[in-house]
Length: 441
Image (cartoon, rainbow, N blue to C red; front, side, top):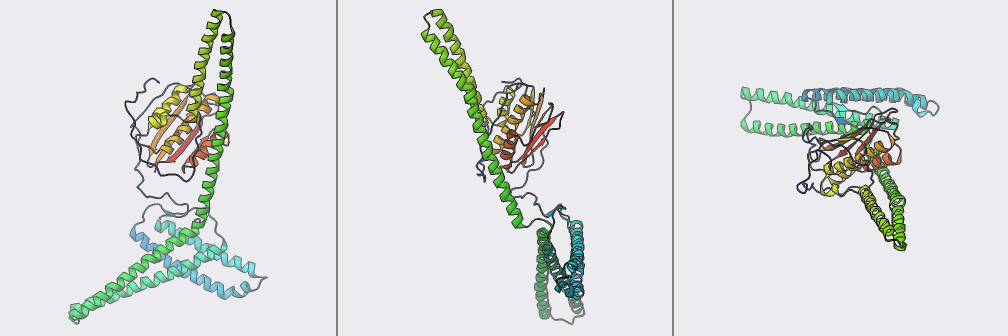
């Protein structure tokens, strides 16, 4: 047990059950041996937890923060004006460029002129959505000419319909003013007043609902145009899941080969040596010589047991299930050959797959630092921020770690299988920093 670590007095709280993931997650492993560990519990400033059911920001169009109603209203009015500009653009293009669009020889030049104006109008719509509605729009997404024309057609339709609805609201407000004036002069009876009020309320409800629906359609059209479509997002997600599944399978194969190599080169060789010592002791006619050989065989058997424990720990540490991530990382510190300082600031129960992935990130990074980087100190930080677990491992070695290496590639696949991210920063000369972000929800 490392100095300053407290022994557990009972079983840790059982974390809530985790729903099964999309992928079969293999277990990769790596470990070192022992040094110094420091626990800092309860010192982290944790951000607000993510509300249940809250979706991660979509790679398309997301509202950074709700805009004030007045600004949104101005954005809707400006959208009516830009829709009128779009309609005028289509009308002028149809009148002036129609013959050139029909003739094959002049069609490319006419299309270039048409699309130049169309893309300027979509750029204006992009500014309107960003300024008045607070939308975050990706700057790298390129749309085809067909999508640009389709978006402008939808935008012009919704904008002009929105202008009609706003005009009807204004007309209804004028009629309401005339009705109030008639009531004040005593020219309307109660029955006629009630009829007009009910009819006006129904029309007002329909106008407001129409305006709300048109605004929602405008938002959805902007999301589909300025960002990837739902089909593209689904295809991207399928590709990510397929890649992470393949990476996990490769990591499992690599780990199996490593376990086989450890058993063949380590445990098997020592068992052969143990069998030879026992055979020499059995054939020896000198009692003192036989006792010395038996003592040597006993020492060798203890070494074989240590090697077997080491291989079993590399396959999967039992402390992770019984005592939790904090104590399992303490085992990494005990086996580490260089000073290792751990700041553990995750005071909430974590899902089992997240704990497993975090453990192997630390274990593999510490092992690489001890074996390959000539580091003299390693620092590990584990903290929960909002709904994500952040793991950061930094050593003062010579750097130059290859992110495409088998060990780090296996870690990246394991982390990606949980929808997490792994970052490796290892410039020549050091230091090397490996950080992972894992969703806890």
